[in-house]
Image (cartoon, rainbow, N blue to C red; front, side, top):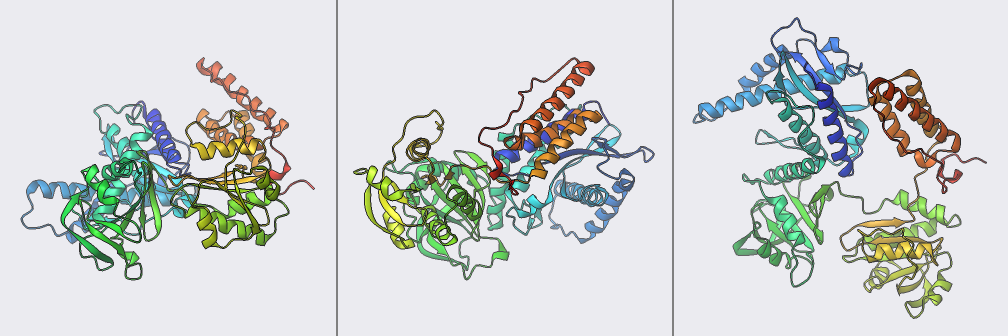
Length: 574
């Protein structure tokens, strides 16, 4: 279609992958550029990359089909009689482009030679003889597992149903801007950070518009500012209900005579101090107009017109709908909210660290871990194989108690003081207010706080063989030790075999790089023989690259990980 299309498509795919990865979403996006003949029907339909991902023969006459759909949709549209010619022209152009994208998306879905991906189509642009559509295909199962709203329009205007959808759409919009240049560039002029910030704006603005606010702009900046603003030295904590005034599911207990604009951080932060003890700030997207709460029984989730912004720490906030988190922002960096605690991962780690722990023991400790996550301040839970002796060793830096299995209320009360709670693998609590000791090992993380790094030092010393749950003040939750997940041997071997076959068959460098990334994710599990095969395959490809292009990439050889053993396989050797 034009020179440089391969590089632009690759750039789009890389930015999408980087942005989604930084957002904490594993969707493995694949990029395509689909070119439909704009004027000469005799020209072929072209797809970049040209590999057989779609049955191109099924993509003919799509623009004519889009025109017919546009004519049908136009008859159903009712614009106000006082609409200007400019407004009518804009509306008609947007409607036509929407019909084109819908037709192309449906056609690609049926023409795809893969059945495990969802296809998202961006705005088209005319480049030479072709109308070109940027396309991203993401793994369908992962896409459908992520939280999503149901309605995709407000008053006839499209809105994103999730943050991950906003990220994909923003990447496609950036690609369309590059296509719309007089000469399309070979690299997109944005980075992943800009995409994430723009997508957060787009999704939050869409959420605010769902509440009935016509001027849905600036909320993301306001929440960033108020979460970072202190009040008399205290970090902000509290909830902000986004809903129209008089919403039947919102109980307004206090009404402000003079609403507080959210664009003034100091004033916004001052009234946030009033939130708590069951009351939240009530906001219409522009001003805080009172204090109250959402009546969950009265709220109809299908309406999707009440959202809650939770300020969870210094510089951190989350956007929720009907008890489901959709977005988290930490110090201006948007991403998907992390699960507070995954019970499967927790119990799997517990059983691997303490093989003799019973199912009842695991459930008791899981209940304690859940209680930790509900604390408004940071705390730690330490599971030690000899908790009684460890409690005595740490005196007087701990308050020992008679070993007992605490209920949720008692456990929550004990975690109100500084220090960790020390329990044994059978779920009995032995000490509270424990100050952990340990020696510096060089394995900590300077970007994390004192709790996290003290736990790292403790596990490397007297706490070796223990398990630690760390809840930071900003809501971050860490489970140590971080054990690699268990995998099937066949999964690892299949990834190695595919990489070797790609090197031997002389596949494209792009395909080899994609298979190589899969092997990188499984590097921890490779044995010596598999490492040798991966290294040889990489060397063969780089030698071919040198012979063909006089360029080679410097690759660090892989080697077996010293911590790897058969326990990391789902079916260990007997």
